[in-house]
Every structure is written in C-alpha cells, then in structure tokens.
Length: 173
Image (cartoon, rainbow, N blue to C red; front, side, top):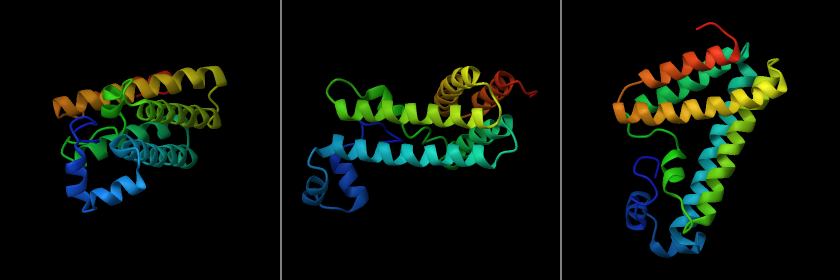
C-alpha cells in the first residue's frame, strides 16, 4: 500500500505476497482489506512516531533533529528507488467515506507525528506556540517534499524542505 496505494493494492496481491490464506486473513481481520490496512497504517505510523522521538532525544538541538528526520525520509526513499515514500500519504489521498476506519487511522498517525515533532522542538527550547506551528509546517513540508521527490525521482524537494525547516526553527542552512 505504501508503494501502490490502498485502492491499487488488492486482497489477492496481499495474499500472494504474504503467503497467508484468505481464511487466515479474514480470521485475523474480519473487516477485510480496510481492517488490515488500518492495522498496518497504525503500526507503521507508530514506528515513525518512535523514530521521531528518538531523533529528537538524541539530537544536540532542534535543527539537528529536523535535519535527521528529513535525511532519514530521503534515505528511505532512495533505498526503494523512489517507489516508497511516506507510509501514510497514499492512503491519506485515497481514504474516503467508504473507509471510515482507515480515514481515522490516517488522522491519528498524522496527529501523532505532529505532536512528536512539537514535543521534540519544545524539548530543545523552542517556545510552545512556535513549536506547534513549526511542527505543523514540518509535517506539511516533509509530506509535500516526499510526494514531489517521488514523482520527480529526485531528492531535491527534500533538500529544499530541509533548508526551509532549518530557517523556520531559527537556524542557518
């Protein structure tokens, strides 16, 4: 789903790639594909939240942490030859009224990421109001940059986002 999106990933494809039976899938995920996608999205989102927290806790300052985040997303995109960007973006674009659980999972994951970035910025001395605004800006920049980078098959948009985020935090690029 990270590579092709929710709608373009069929249950048959999931079964073929995982090697599990249709019966097992529906036993563990009675809600079918949406339930599986929701669970996968929350799990991958949780891993990213933990990574954001880790980067901020290990960084010497907010600018260093922000750079590590963008560099990490860039490395992931490069490692998949621009096939996989954000683990949430494609589902976010596709989830609609027909997939309420998936839509809620997307909102939850993005809120968790924004909160983690905000808390990380605050832990490095960024004033609370500014931290909230910069966290939302960071999420907007990273998500947009990942989409542009993936479509252009270039890391340039992520480098532009990193420079802008450094400036927003108050650092020098």
